[in-house]
Amino acid sequence: MAFALDLLRCEPCWNRLANEMAETDGATARPRIDPGPESFEPIEPDECPKCGMEVRTVLTNYDRWVHLATVPMRAKEVPRRYWWRVEPIRADYSTYVVGSVAVRVRGIEPLPDDLVMPAHTVVCADPDAIEEVRRARLSDVERQYRVAPSVEEFEDE
Image 1 (tube, helix red, strand yellow):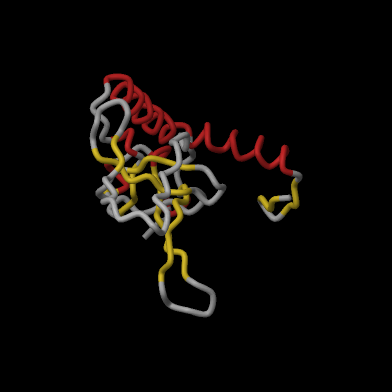
Image 2: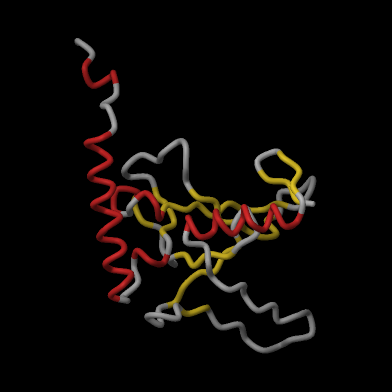
């Protein structure tokens, strides 16, 4: 049994929902290899399978993995479908950070100069990724013309 959106779901239903969310969000990365407690080998950073650049592989809040860029960017420089935040996980009744989880930015949008952690696709050198980001930017521009302007823009001063 798994909890999602405050509902208790059976394992097959949860996996179907999580896989659909991962496909929509682009969280289709393979999990990091756990070296185990007895390993003394250095852990190399993950690489993008398409372009070879260093990526940050992070667990999402719905138990899937996503490749993120290694440096945060301003929200206005990143198409909205690639906005992520990396939230710390703290131990119970403690201030110590024991891990992190990637959360898609939805609902309350960041201000244009707020930092977001972009999906690696935004900085990927692969031609398919470049074209995908270009289409996402055009979609954002089209969305600005479809969404009604806020009331505050038309208030009399």
